[in-house]
Image 1: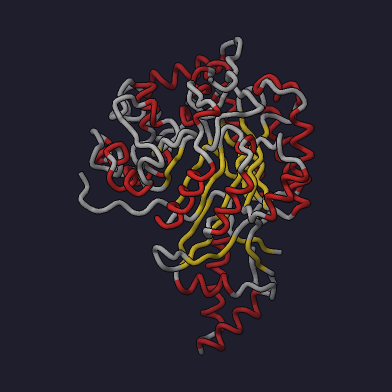
Image 2: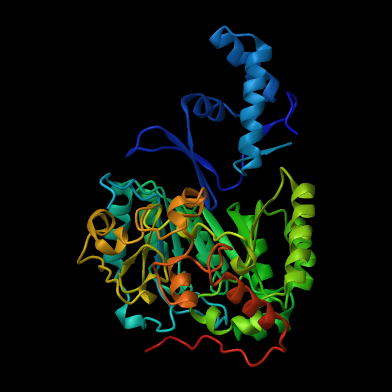
Length: 90
Length: 365
């Protein structure tokens, strides 16, 4: 279960890449790929080893939005991506 | 015919060669293997990689046969990296020594998928004709992990090694790999010839199902387990290749451009060959790719089925092999009139004493 204390990173062999032909961004991993929307791309690109809570606070400040709303969205997104095998957490 | 232009392909499976140190009885290569002297040269494979990137493909899978049997593999991986392609090496590991591994890392390889036929040497030798392979593969797995490359272990399941699945998953967990495939043999090519000797029983499948579910829960967040069952025991067919001509382009050792690696068994279809044809012309214009793409080709009741855009009608090669018609229902679907007969046959075979295996014969020419 991913929480504000978790440190989330890309799973082994997974990378974030621009799709130059279709536009947008994709996550590429072992035998899997996923097209990301702008928000997912932003969140994934900001996974730099900090606890998820810090990332949520930073995004809430940048977008001038309530921390609990941003927190719910970010945790939901990271959980979905982890369940699909694109992320690891500890 | 669909009037919309098909979406661009996402990935290319490159069967660089049919040469392989193993002779697996379940091999999905065609029965008529391509000899080494008919394989595409390095420059043609590089041109295929260039075009793959231009077309919008994102991943390339170096496969075979054993792709490491090609002397130019490193050069091809390096080329894929330069074109921004995610590169996956699908290998038996038997030719992957420390020097080659360092070269692959340097060339920018993204991921290694290492196959295990068994964890027991006798079991592995029985199904692959290769002695001492398990010990070598264990060394390779450790070497790959130590190099920092992402590693998937692919365990190929038959009724003879189901009892060791638990040990296989223990092994993967102890190594700390990020991903495991529990891949039941699919019955094409050599595998179809040997189905009676390999297919698990229904009871074994139930055991595998519960073991995988339990391990998935235990390893959540650490190790992904992808699980493929023998589709004979499924209620609905698999979405073969994610749909005919919808996601994948396969290029065979001789350059044949196919929607799936078994498509040449469908005798009334002709397929183009690289570099005589571009990948783009094959994908967007060739009738072989259009033949079973989307849903317009579907017979009843597929055309009105709720699952039609999930399984895309299953596997055309299997419909031909088991029902005698590539355009009919995949008989593993419970709605197929042949379903009961096919499943009963598989179940009967799974309980028969195992006869002689027909191991893949060494390169055809």
